[in-house]
Length: 218
Image 1 (tube, rainbow, N blue to C red):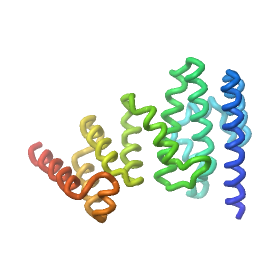
Image 2 (cartoon, rainbow, N blue to C red):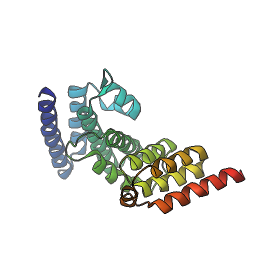
Image 3 (tube, one colour):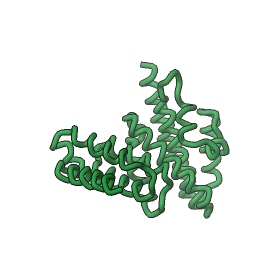
Image 4 (tube, rainbow, N blue to C red):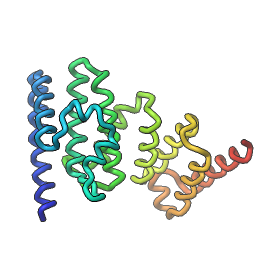
């Protein structure tokens, strides 16, 4: 009961903050909006903007974990605030500061989706998908692609997972053995699940055969 009440309060609070930030953006008071975000991070999570920029997404997850349980409501709220801050910095003409934060928010939303965390204002996958579309024009780091691979597979978008896998193989970021394991995991799934995920069984078999042939020729 306490957890549900806390979660509902967090939803209400995030809705108010996002509304306040949007209002300040419309008034072109971006610096004030940044202060609102910074004050909430400090008050609610004892994490100011400077600390957020220094910590990796994995570090933030660890800080939001108690006795092995991730506090997903807090993590989701932090991801939302980071995303809002990145947008403000970009609109202020400081993309070199905004882009790393946007990437960090993307990582956090993907991690939340992999955990099957409940929605705050939107589901983690909806948030991650929006950032995926925005960031797709860039050559993304290896760690981002690895997380994307796991996220797409966990969410059942097997065709997208395969696309990212091909990039990772080209980059030398994963081994042929890891690719084989991916296709073999998919072969354990029902035909309808594979078809729904955009990768029918015959295409999974084709992908597995291709990788095995490449490993044999290597």
